[in-house]
Length: 100
Image 1: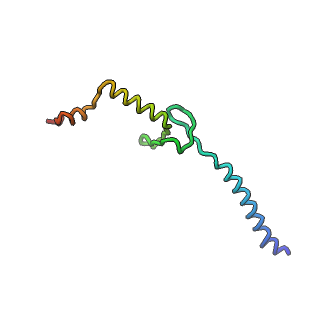
Image 2: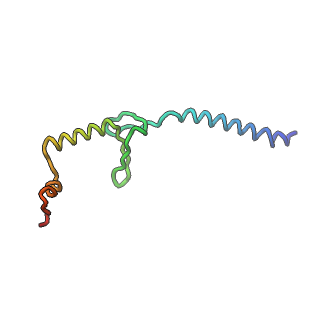
Image 3: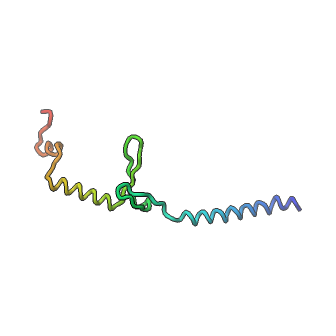
């Protein structure tokens, strides 16, 4: 009788316990992982953020869409408002090479 307990009942009991524990962990992990935007410091799900690796040490920064949009409009207003063109764009328009 002891043989049957060790061969059949204990593995079934262990399997049932593992199934119950794994279902509990699965329910807890359904919440999306949250990350903080590097500019506005608000929490967002990771699938709503853009991750960029910066520098030699591979530091990763996360940016939300709202901050990216604000940066784009600030940069666009600055370049359009001042009428600033970089040196390379001026050279390309004039057709001159800087070394000639």
